[in-house]
Length: 361
Ligand SMILES: *Cc1c(COP(=O)(O)O)cnc(C)c1O
Image (tube, rainbow, N blue to C red; front, side, top):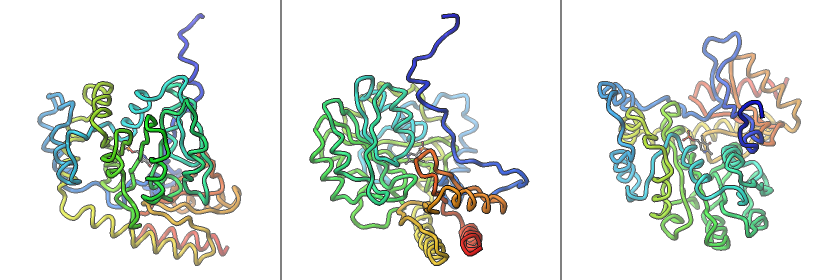
């Protein structure tokens, strides 16, 4: 060997490409490609970062104790069972590094969130994808893939990019049939937006046993994607593992301060949730009336099915021509669809008008 060579599994993965943010000819394109929340960051979070700046020379508290206290208080959870990370992506990756590895199998659903596959392959796991029914996670298809090598099952609930979800009955059925040693990871990045009554973000199953983890994020409803802040809620033995494998300082001073302030921002969750419910319904109705097929969503985005790749590309081009960036979901096996984030009222109106024109034109 004449030069350094990385482990072979690294080349089974392409570098991650996030939602686009630039559009030629537009100084400020409307970015509806990354589900970043409709309102920007909570004002209190901005103030908290400014206040934290003077202490930049101090290392953070690696265990993020104050933030965990605030999370525990806000969501009624034991702070000892919470671990914080540099985005929930980090928690997901640490779980895979800890419980996966060469010779193990990781199961996700067909159109599940890409990080599970990327991190799984990098860790040397074999990643298996369970077919979906109506673009929805199918418990029986997951169970059919379970083998002696299975170590982990990852489900985003609601799922990105489909927006669909599993009710608590199905989730409990899955947990009851899955072998006890298989770790079930419930990625609840969009939990705050769910309207369906038969939903639990994961707390019940985490509390009920030793083999389920819930992950959450500040990147979506709290509008803090750029701060990189996420957290997990897990049984004590799994928290212990995560605290051993996590980096010494996963959460920087600014993210921690902003996170605490965001949790305390009066009415933020309620306001954001109400806005999303109204606009998601309105946009879904308007696009449906225009003859487009919208997948019913419980998240802060909708998936629109244009039937063919050509039509999806043409719709994307039409939106871009008017300065709007949405998410192509080819890499999720859905090249005939586009994923559109629920933005402000004005942004939703513009999307509805442009896609109605497109559909009729
Ligand atoms: C956005 C998203 C995340 C990533 O969250 P970060 O906390 O920003 O790392 C995790 N899971 C799903 C399903 C997401 O859509």
